[in-house]
Amino acid sequence: MSLPRRVIITITSAHAPLFEGTHTTGVFVTEVLHPFKVFTEAGFEVDITSEKGTYTPDWLSLTPDFLSGSDRATWDDVSSPFRKKLDNHPLASTIDGNKYGIFFASAGHASLLDYPTATDLKKIAATVWSNGGIVSSVCHGPAVFQDLIDTATGEPLIKGKTLTGFTTEAETVMGIQEELKSWKKPLVEETAEAMGATYKRSKGVWDDYHIVDGRLVTGQNPASATSTAKAAVEAFEKL
Image (cartoon, rainbow, N blue to C red; front, side):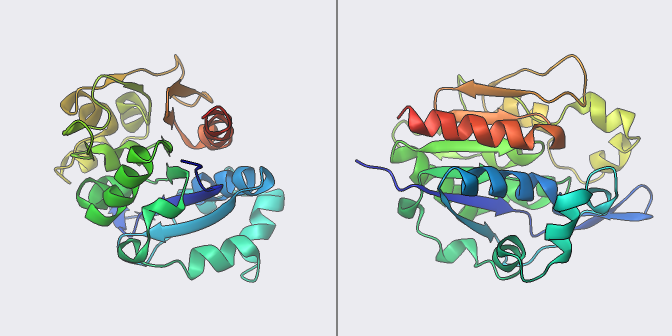
Protein backbone atom coordinates (compact mmCIF):
# COMPACT_ATOMS: atom_id res chain seq x y z
CA MET A 1 0.00 0.00 0.00
CA SER A 2 1.06 3.60 -0.56
CA LEU A 3 1.91 5.11 2.80
CA PRO A 4 0.64 8.59 3.70
CA ARG A 5 3.25 11.33 3.62
CA ARG A 6 2.23 12.27 7.09
CA VAL A 7 3.97 12.11 10.49
CA ILE A 8 2.57 11.80 14.00
CA ILE A 9 4.90 13.10 16.72
CA THR A 10 4.03 11.97 20.23
CA ILE A 11 4.71 13.98 23.37
CA THR A 12 4.49 13.10 27.04
CA SER A 13 1.53 14.29 29.11
CA ALA A 14 3.43 13.60 32.32
CA HIS A 15 5.39 16.03 34.44
CA ALA A 16 7.35 15.53 37.63
CA PRO A 17 9.82 17.28 39.92
CA LEU A 18 13.51 16.59 39.40
CA PHE A 19 16.75 17.75 40.96
CA GLU A 20 15.28 17.40 44.44
CA GLY A 21 12.17 19.34 43.53
CA THR A 22 13.93 22.42 42.16
CA HIS A 23 12.86 21.85 38.54
CA THR A 24 10.08 20.17 36.56
CA THR A 25 10.51 17.72 33.73
CA GLY A 26 8.02 17.37 30.91
CA VAL A 27 8.24 17.65 27.12
CA PHE A 28 11.76 18.38 25.87
CA VAL A 29 10.80 21.12 23.42
CA THR A 30 13.53 20.77 20.78
CA GLU A 31 12.91 17.02 20.55
CA VAL A 32 9.54 17.99 19.12
CA LEU A 33 10.49 21.21 17.34
CA HIS A 34 13.54 19.95 15.44
CA PRO A 35 11.76 16.87 14.01
CA PHE A 36 8.72 19.06 13.24
CA LYS A 37 10.97 21.29 11.13
CA VAL A 38 12.71 18.38 9.39
CA PHE A 39 9.49 16.60 8.50
CA THR A 40 7.74 19.79 7.38
CA GLU A 41 10.65 20.82 5.18
CA ALA A 42 10.63 17.33 3.64
CA GLY A 43 7.03 17.83 2.57
CA PHE A 44 5.26 15.84 5.26
CA GLU A 45 2.11 16.92 7.03
CA VAL A 46 2.92 16.79 10.72
CA ASP A 47 0.56 16.26 13.65
CA ILE A 48 1.25 16.07 17.38
CA THR A 49 -0.55 13.98 19.99
CA SER A 50 -0.29 12.81 23.59
CA GLU A 51 -2.01 10.25 25.76
CA LYS A 52 -3.97 12.80 27.80
CA GLY A 53 -4.02 15.84 25.50
CA THR A 54 -1.92 18.00 27.81
CA TYR A 55 1.75 18.86 28.16
CA THR A 56 4.24 20.66 30.37
CA PRO A 57 7.53 21.91 28.89
CA ASP A 58 10.69 20.54 30.46
CA TRP A 59 12.52 23.33 32.30
CA LEU A 60 15.93 22.37 30.91
CA SER A 61 14.68 22.41 27.34
CA LEU A 62 13.70 26.07 27.72
CA THR A 63 17.16 27.23 28.82
CA PRO A 64 19.43 29.11 26.36
CA ASP A 65 21.75 26.11 26.04
CA PHE A 66 18.95 24.21 24.33
CA LEU A 67 16.51 26.85 23.05
CA SER A 68 17.84 29.97 21.40
CA GLY A 69 17.83 31.90 18.12
CA SER A 70 15.15 30.89 15.63
CA ASP A 71 14.09 27.99 17.84
CA ARG A 72 13.37 30.39 20.70
CA ALA A 73 11.49 32.72 18.35
CA THR A 74 9.32 29.84 17.14
CA TRP A 75 8.59 28.77 20.71
CA ASP A 76 7.73 32.32 21.83
CA ASP A 77 5.38 32.84 18.87
CA VAL A 78 2.19 31.15 20.04
CA SER A 79 0.69 31.73 16.58
CA SER A 80 3.46 29.80 14.80
CA PRO A 81 2.40 26.59 13.04
CA PHE A 82 4.47 24.62 15.54
CA ARG A 83 2.92 26.18 18.63
CA LYS A 84 -0.58 25.89 17.19
CA LYS A 85 -0.09 22.16 16.63
CA LEU A 86 1.56 21.68 20.02
CA ASP A 87 -0.85 23.74 22.10
CA ASN A 88 -3.97 22.35 20.46
CA HIS A 89 -2.96 18.74 19.92
CA PRO A 90 -5.65 16.03 20.07
CA LEU A 91 -5.86 13.01 22.34
CA ALA A 92 -4.09 9.92 21.04
CA SER A 93 -7.37 8.02 21.39
CA THR A 94 -8.80 10.12 18.54
CA ILE A 95 -5.89 9.45 16.17
CA ASP A 96 -6.15 6.92 13.33
CA GLY A 97 -2.72 5.40 12.84
CA ASN A 98 -3.63 4.41 9.30
CA LYS A 99 -3.29 8.05 8.28
CA TYR A 100 0.46 8.15 9.01
CA GLY A 101 3.61 6.81 7.42
CA ILE A 102 5.95 7.80 10.26
CA PHE A 103 5.52 7.55 14.02
CA PHE A 104 8.03 9.63 16.02
CA ALA A 105 8.21 9.52 19.84
CA SER A 106 9.75 12.67 21.28
CA ALA A 107 10.60 12.68 24.94
CA GLY A 108 11.86 14.37 28.07
CA HIS A 109 12.43 12.48 31.32
CA ALA A 110 8.69 12.60 32.05
CA SER A 111 8.04 10.19 29.18
CA LEU A 112 9.46 7.47 31.41
CA LEU A 113 6.33 7.93 33.51
CA ASP A 114 3.49 7.74 30.98
CA TYR A 115 4.90 6.19 27.79
CA PRO A 116 5.24 2.65 29.21
CA THR A 117 1.48 2.44 29.78
CA ALA A 118 0.29 4.81 27.04
CA THR A 119 -2.00 2.33 25.30
CA ASP A 120 -3.31 4.79 22.74
CA LEU A 121 0.16 5.94 21.70
CA LYS A 122 1.20 2.31 21.37
CA LYS A 123 -1.85 1.57 19.24
CA ILE A 124 -0.81 4.29 16.78
CA ALA A 125 2.77 2.98 16.64
CA ALA A 126 1.60 -0.61 16.15
CA THR A 127 -0.69 0.44 13.31
CA VAL A 128 2.01 2.45 11.51
CA TRP A 129 4.38 -0.51 11.88
CA SER A 130 1.88 -3.10 10.68
CA ASN A 131 1.19 -0.95 7.62
CA GLY A 132 4.88 -1.01 6.74
CA GLY A 133 5.71 2.48 7.99
CA ILE A 134 8.56 3.92 10.04
CA VAL A 135 8.59 3.83 13.84
CA SER A 136 11.09 6.20 15.40
CA SER A 137 12.04 7.77 18.72
CA VAL A 138 14.61 9.99 20.36
CA CYS A 139 16.20 10.20 23.82
CA HIS A 140 13.74 8.72 26.37
CA GLY A 141 11.23 8.01 23.59
CA PRO A 142 11.94 4.24 23.61
CA ALA A 143 9.93 4.12 26.85
CA VAL A 144 6.93 3.74 24.52
CA PHE A 145 8.36 0.41 23.33
CA GLN A 146 7.67 -1.18 26.71
CA ASP A 147 5.13 -3.94 25.95
CA LEU A 148 4.54 -2.55 22.44
CA ILE A 149 3.60 -5.61 20.41
CA ASP A 150 4.09 -6.28 16.72
CA THR A 151 0.62 -7.52 15.79
CA ALA A 152 1.99 -9.67 12.97
CA THR A 153 4.26 -11.73 15.23
CA GLY A 154 2.74 -11.31 18.69
CA GLU A 155 6.24 -10.44 19.92
CA PRO A 156 7.62 -7.12 21.23
CA LEU A 157 8.02 -4.78 18.27
CA ILE A 158 11.67 -4.13 19.08
CA LYS A 159 12.61 -7.75 19.81
CA GLY A 160 15.73 -8.74 17.89
CA LYS A 161 16.35 -5.16 16.73
CA THR A 162 19.05 -2.65 17.58
CA LEU A 163 18.21 0.74 19.01
CA THR A 164 19.61 3.65 20.95
CA GLY A 165 18.28 6.21 23.41
CA PHE A 166 19.29 8.18 26.47
CA THR A 167 22.11 6.43 28.29
CA THR A 168 21.99 5.32 31.90
CA GLU A 169 25.43 6.90 32.26
CA ALA A 170 23.95 10.28 31.33
CA GLU A 171 21.37 9.96 34.11
CA THR A 172 24.27 9.50 36.53
CA VAL A 173 26.19 12.42 35.03
CA MET A 174 23.11 14.60 35.56
CA GLY A 175 22.94 13.47 39.17
CA ILE A 176 19.36 12.20 39.00
CA GLN A 177 19.84 8.44 38.90
CA GLU A 178 18.49 7.89 42.41
CA GLU A 179 15.47 10.15 41.83
CA LEU A 180 14.59 8.25 38.67
CA LYS A 181 14.83 4.95 40.52
CA SER A 182 12.16 6.23 42.91
CA TRP A 183 9.77 6.43 39.95
CA LYS A 184 9.99 2.66 39.64
CA LYS A 185 9.98 2.87 35.85
CA PRO A 186 12.53 1.28 33.52
CA LEU A 187 15.22 3.43 31.95
CA VAL A 188 15.82 3.21 28.20
CA GLU A 189 18.56 0.58 28.41
CA GLU A 190 16.41 -1.51 30.73
CA THR A 191 13.43 -1.33 28.38
CA ALA A 192 15.58 -2.48 25.47
CA GLU A 193 16.85 -5.46 27.43
CA ALA A 194 13.41 -6.41 28.74
CA MET A 195 11.90 -6.32 25.25
CA GLY A 196 14.69 -8.38 23.68
CA ALA A 197 16.40 -5.58 21.78
CA THR A 198 20.09 -4.74 21.50
CA TYR A 199 20.99 -1.34 22.90
CA LYS A 200 23.91 0.61 21.43
CA ARG A 201 25.25 4.07 22.14
CA SER A 202 27.98 6.47 21.11
CA LYS A 203 31.12 6.85 23.20
CA GLY A 204 30.05 10.28 24.44
CA VAL A 205 26.72 10.60 26.25
CA TRP A 206 25.96 13.93 24.51
CA ASP A 207 27.07 12.93 20.99
CA ASP A 208 24.71 13.30 18.04
CA TYR A 209 24.02 9.63 17.37
CA HIS A 210 21.25 7.59 15.81
CA ILE A 211 20.65 4.05 14.59
CA VAL A 212 18.63 2.81 11.63
CA ASP A 213 17.55 -0.83 11.84
CA GLY A 214 15.23 -1.32 8.91
CA ARG A 215 12.03 0.56 9.71
CA LEU A 216 13.10 1.29 13.30
CA VAL A 217 14.95 4.61 13.65
CA THR A 218 16.18 5.82 17.04
CA GLY A 219 18.29 8.69 18.39
CA GLN A 220 20.31 8.94 21.60
CA ASN A 221 19.64 12.39 23.06
CA PRO A 222 18.34 15.93 22.35
CA ALA A 223 21.32 16.65 20.11
CA SER A 224 20.23 13.73 17.93
CA ALA A 225 16.67 14.90 17.25
CA THR A 226 17.41 16.47 13.87
CA SER A 227 19.61 13.67 12.52
CA THR A 228 17.14 11.05 13.72
CA ALA A 229 14.25 12.76 11.97
CA LYS A 230 16.30 13.07 8.78
CA ALA A 231 17.16 9.37 8.99
CA ALA A 232 13.46 8.57 9.43
CA VAL A 233 12.69 10.54 6.27
CA GLU A 234 15.44 8.69 4.38
CA ALA A 235 14.11 5.35 5.59
CA PHE A 236 10.60 6.32 4.51
CA GLU A 237 11.78 7.32 1.02
CA LYS A 238 13.28 3.83 0.59
CA LEU A 239 10.04 1.98 1.39
